[in-house]
Length: 103
Image (tube, rainbow, N blue to C red; front, side, top):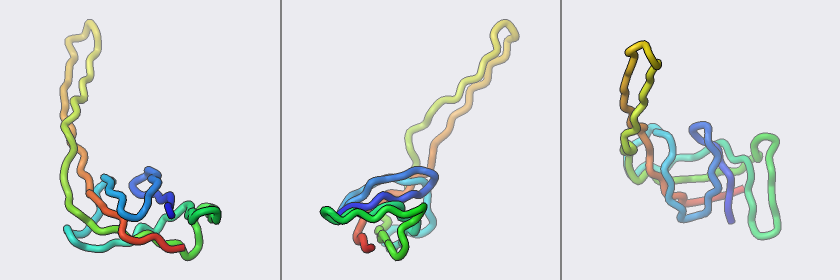
């Protein structure tokens, strides 16, 4: 059984027991949360596709922890104008483990 959910503006294909990094969610480590935007649920040959969401479908996940990704460098430059700017960015994330899919 698997589901396709949307969180943080991205879509993920999930199965029970999967672990993934998503955009930062509220909650602390050990909390169980619902991912409400379920776009599709498949169980063997039966597939339910929502328009846009599947009614009554639910995906539960456990928060494993929070963190920040590797730093990326943002560099801007205008040639011949002596304009150079360097900026760094680290995106916050939440590590999840899928515990239940129903729908």
